[in-house]
Image (cartoon, protein in one colour):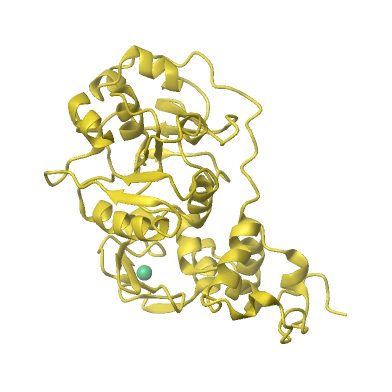
Length: 341
Ligand SMILES: [Zn+2]
């Protein structure tokens, strides 16, 4: 009998991809997708050259051509990031992605490898789906609802005014400046699950961004890749209205303020598998989705990928903005109205 700490590295490796891991670290926004590869600054030695770190998406391997001068698979990456052994990395992956512990510990028996004649065997997309499905199902261990609320958030902070939000929108979304606790000195933005329960607060730094000050802070352990900001309210809007998908909290709140209430934010420029599933769950073949990301390199790369994936189950259009650097936040109420016709 294998010891209880025996981990089948191969099973763990095949259950997750580099994309999942980068998503876990919230790094996808820093990476540029091109064909089968992702490139960005190296998260291990924390470099800033945007091409020093490359990932092969299909092979799920990485390489740092700069300081680290090394590469490897998903587990090597987690081991380096967490400064633990491969065994430690595998245990972390099992925990983070909610992988089936038993399956990851069992010696590779012929559990499902034998050629049973299940009807699904002739599915066209057989080579990639089992992997993805395993992770989606398991990684969907939801973010638990918070047992507390941040109180006395200041609704009149200058930053909120600067971003063009009216008091009505600020109160409606429950955002405000927080003076103490986890989100101290930040604008706290509550994130709800589809059932409308608060699962986290994101904290936006309201001033100039300097080295070492992250723009957004989310609680440790919270997986934003499992949520879609404002989905709980968007799904209550009429079926025949298009669902608008934006990147950020402020774009979402601003569109809402300007008359587009069926809007959700990805909280980044990429769409996770879990987010894709959420959209699928709350739409049908007749649904329309408008992908409206920021007009910049990340936004353009993201929207192609997102639209391509959503097109398999809804009617999707990409809405490009007219000038470089423009964001959905800048749309006037007239432009928002035009978007929805
Ligand atoms: Zn490196």
